[in-house]
Length: 177
Image (cartoon, rainbow, N blue to C red; front, side, top):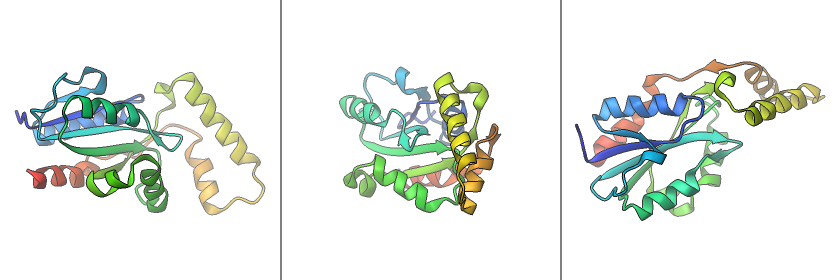
């Protein structure tokens, strides 16, 4: 077991946990929900943190950032999972600029991993929010192709995750030593 790397995550519908576990297997390192993170992270050379995107925010990042610093995390790598396809590069770039500080953007490797929607595992408030978004989009008069694609995408659960999407993150971590 590689005890120089650890993967910590927040997961609500299972996508982030699945990706975290794949990383743990690939990097042969421990994987834990953030709430179960070791009290001392200073012994790890790299801490990988992942969470879902929720209304454009990396869910739990502010709390995780503080906790990781307090517990002595050295090098960080961050990943986000979401329902957007990887091809939505401009939206993903914007999301990162809204969630990471300019310093973090330049110093912390960050990766977006397309995942999907799982209504079955969502909380009631999230399901209601998504239903409202679908309803509002259906009422929009002049829809762009992007609007229509969004409306179609949020109608039901789907899974666009793939183990291959962790490859760039794994290679980055391995290259950092």
